[in-house]
Image (cartoon, rainbow, N blue to C red; front, side, top):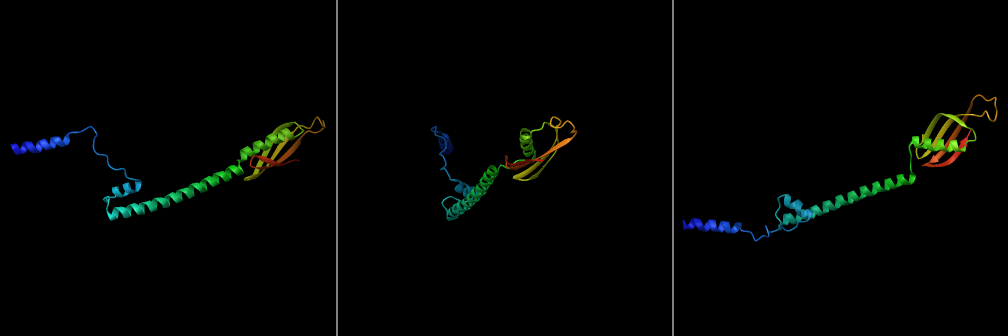
Length: 159
């Protein structure tokens, strides 16, 4: 019976805590964690080799991510500088400009056509009222053409 009490006392002694909890594991950097999780033992030659290879691989991935992000930001910057707009907005810009520029009252917009990408050409036809100028005119059409670079009108013509 004496021999049974001693192991139990040692076991209970091991369960006592001084309040500090279990000894904290040393902090491992990400490369060391990869190698430890792969089952390698810290301090061995294989572990050191694994850490070196992992650092090289992560550096290569980091370079690739930086290049990819750099390309994206350059593409976004170029897009902002070019300010490419959609056909609907190009039509609105040209329509507003044409309505402000023409000397005839516009009855209605008849049709519009947009071509191009960054440099767009918008052609708009309007039915206009020219009766104040010539009471015998029954029907008259005005065709306006805007050339845009981005949101900027660079040329405007009426026919």
